[in-house]
Amino acid sequence: MVFRRILALVALLIAAGACTPGSNSPLQTAAPAGASSGSGTLPPEVEKTVGPVYSSPALQALVDRVGQKVVTGGNIAGSFRFYVLDQPLPNAHALLPGYVFVTRGLLALIDDEAELAAALGHELGHVVLRHAAERERARRGVMDAAVDAAMVSGSVTVGRSVAREGMLKLRRYSREQELEADRVGVGYVVSAGYRGDAMVTLVEKLRRQSQLEDRLIGQMPDPGDQPSAMSTHPATNERLAALREIASTAAPGLSDRASYLAAIDGMSVDDSAAEGFVRGTAFLHPTMRLAFEAPRDFRLFNDHDGVLGVGRDRSLMYFSCRDEAVPGSLADWLRDKLKPTPSDIQTTEIGGVEAAIGSRPRGSDTGVGQLRYVIVRRDKGLCFFNLLSEGPDRDRRIEVLVAAARSFHSLSAAEAAALRPYRLGVIAPAGASAASLAQRMAYGDFKLERLLVLNGVDTAAELARRSPVKIVEP
Image (cartoon, rainbow, N blue to C red; front, side, top):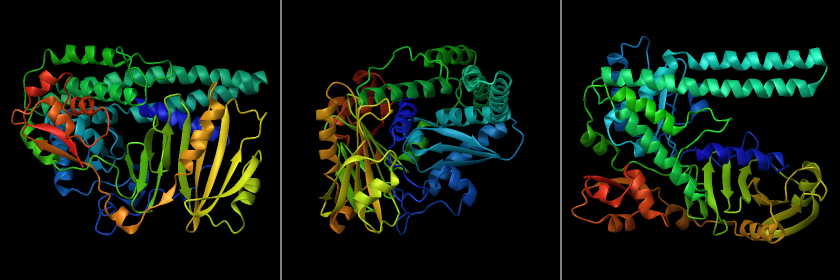
């Protein structure tokens, strides 16, 4: 999925020598009064690992009911608990002992209880097949072999080569495990009484979402979804072919679409207020009361540690904040804290407060183009932008990124209070065209494409045959 590539871009930007958030990075703040953090539901050590659950007892009850039905129908040994995580990206995973999670983002894509059962069944398949433990043993074996090779040969390069070859084999092994979890998961879904093709329709929805994400950052989707050598997942076409063969012999079963859609009606499809909101090219944080505007061709990706912006030309900007007292000037902080020491350090003001801007020294062995650091004093800490531009237009482009960083400003109490998360609505189209429904979508672009993906269809004609339909409203 595109988010894995985004994480790789973050790693590139940080590896280039950028400022990095400390463990006390406050970009994810405490939940506002009246919001549930889920701390009373998940043990603190589990919540620290996976994040808070979504504060909807009805949705939590739905997911647990379907999960327990899959466990019972599949005659799966052990005790399991199922939760909805308060995250907008579509995902599901399991955590020992016996925790299985789906995100709000995945629930928004799913169309009925059968697909929810498929997502949970796949994760239960990983647990029953002990894939996590097997992967960890294999990983340790690869690293031990690499260390041994380096010691015997006396060459770190040889050790690295062995490690790389071993990790490639491990990733191919992981792809085989995904297919195994699919096969086992389908059996659980059917045994629980749900339709046997639910895993097929779920994977098709995930493929549409992945292709839309590619388009959002200006990348042409690969219709074959072929995995690279580094991929841990099988190609979607390969996965779907295997699933369709299995589903062709499965008996029809329940879908329970109406009750499922009624349960997710009104669910947030946004980040929480404690994480801040992406609105087009703007990022606004109502709890911290700050905002900035990225260049017009950028896509912003919000995570609890920071906000990553990706330009059409693959220019990057990374924003975060940290609670760190800076007693002296920010220019001195740049000189003392960053290595190699930035050049051309300027003191300035951004948003009416002290700021400093520095450049990566020319000739540094970074393998990247123009790099700038922009530091802004904020309350008891600081916020920073790491800006990177490559390519023939990098000199002009880096100035555009610096100008974007200079848009950083505080929000008034009224501006912060007016910010609300986008929510999913389930409506009867009543003869409305796909184009008119798309205009109701809260987003500024790709309205029709987002509407079709949300409803699991490829064309407006297919959407016209569905009722009710899902839309995203302000």
